[in-house]
Amino acid sequence: MTDWFKVGKIVNTHGVRGEIRVISSTDFAEERYAIGTELMIKHEGSKEEILVVVRHHRKHKNFDLLQFENYHSINEVERFKGATLYVSEEQLEELEEGEFYYHEIIGCKVITESGEELGKIKEIIETGANDVWVIQRTGAGKDILIPYIEDVVKEIDIEEKVIHIHVMEGLID
Image (cartoon, rainbow, N blue to C red; front, side, top):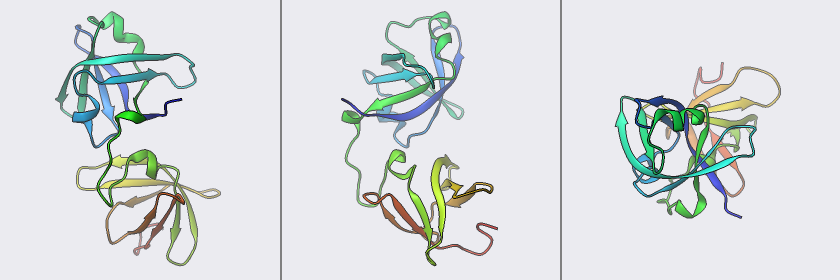
């Protein structure tokens, strides 16, 4: 059984020729949306999985615009709005030392230098300068936002799903 990993969310259609507008959750948009790439479309809570092949990809403002083979009009892609795009595990490439896929980071426990467990990473936000990791606190409380920078993130253990951080002043107050 193949594992599939989230690469984006379809937020709308674009134009009348079957383009969709995607907010990407991948650092590798050019590879993920290359012509001929197979993607899976799935709505949350639905069992239906639709396999599509990328026919065209371009950037427009903060979005990736995609067209799929055999989908030529807005009417055919309208139903994809709100769905998530996935790429198969076979299409993932080996990363350099110290680089990680989002799915490897999401779900990791976050522990401070003093040994306090803050919670688990539930989301990664791309800001341009550096990614921001959203930590869902253990117990109650508002989510914690930490920048993915050397001064804060000290150690990442993907095997154990644990991240050790240095809490700078004002970071979690």
